[in-house]
Length: 616
Ligand code: OXD
Ligand code: MN
Image 1: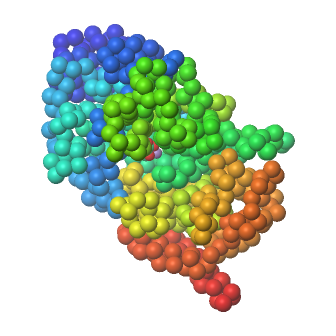
Image 2 (image 1 turned 135 degrees about the vertical axis):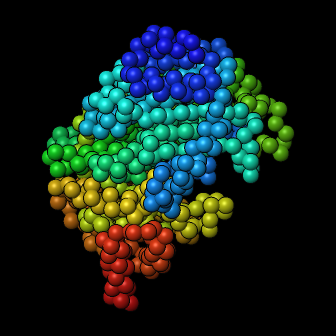
Image 3 (image 1 turned 45 degrees about the vertical axis):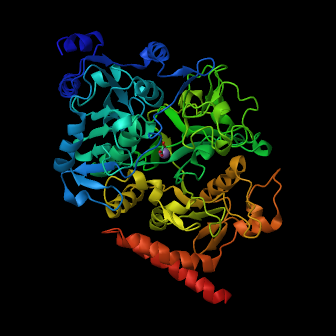
């Protein structure tokens, strides 16, 4: 491309390593034009995207886009972690040798941008100046303008961010090509999609999708897979699919920070964005840091620190409403610049709707189209019950739009982490909260995290689908080494965070009602956990951790049945003993699991056996 240098000069891109990388790929992909994108280009890119019909207006400063119907979710089967080291193969990382897979994905990409613009998106995952800054830089190349709009909302984007890197070579090379979506054979034996992270080369090659989870390379591929690998290879940090929030006690002025992992459909975003329950709102304020990713490291003072490397929220729209997540609604209100994907859209009024937004869809269907673009009014009677929005429809909005975003959310120092929680949707066995002070038992608990399979296709109804630390789809190196890395990082702290397992989803076995009201009330369990960490309450030791005494839980203003409360604060020893066999089988898959983890498993199992004998 003759005028490439001129484009890069005009954009002020001075990092010569980045320029070389851009040149190589512009040639290889056959791009006709190259355009470097900064966040300040947003308004212009929005105008262009509206003009071309790639996005549509959805109210003042709100936008809507629809994806190709077979391209609406991450594809785990097509996602690969590649390196040149066979010993990097784990159970979940779908490892391939980079020599074998690189040519395949590059083969699909070669020449794919003929006649097209290649956008260059320099970004940082993590605020400028953080101790992990050198792992944060990346440059995404993409053929997709809507992806640029998402990236501007989800990451810190700008040429200035990569011109002055401490090591100009050290940026993630993130190449995204959408591909010819109707002709990629999605889900067939001839599937052409490949989502590859070449972790030891810090290179991401994604071909065949424009869906956020596959196409916003800063987020999952860099922020999670690559970061987890970097954190391990450098021995410096953990990159986890965790939310992060702060709880301020307005009486004492103290703030405590809680982060944690939840398998999908277990309420992570709602918890991350929660507010205090009304009855406790005068005393406590909850602040939002992040809903999806946390990077954790040990600070010079020996405490564990955490930050959210993202700059936005890519949240599931379904079931977001005033009760489940009022802050999310504010974060996508008019004027926020939010971008919706695959919800229902009214082409006359520019309104949007998704299942769960209100109990029923709009009564007057005039102008409404479903996520596939079909007019609702044209539906046959047998399609009447079909959802208007895709179940994985999304909103994309920047962190700064979240009304309770923490004042220090951009502080590069990160925040001190007081507690690490795990929680999967479980109908029985798991109490409201059980705290774990022992490091190996805490890591063991994370490794045996799971959520109940909800669809027959996913497994036996009610049986746990294990999702270690909620990282199953993002694991980039072997699980045994992952467990050891956790023991090493958290073990290097002098003031170790407390671990806990939470569950908002226990049900009455007879009538199925939820035993705990959930949503904003969940803060009560976290308040207790913070108090336990501070030694203000003692709880009751059980074989699987410390559970609250009922008088220790702050229940002010909450109506809850006594029997329900008793159940969610007790341990069903027999159900737990059944679970232990499944846990052992699950852990047995992992090579080189540290002996400390096995010892933790045996201790918990022995304590349960002991309890069973005492109560028999
Ligand atoms: C995910 C996401 O797929 O955060 O987990 O989008
Ligand atoms: Mn996620």
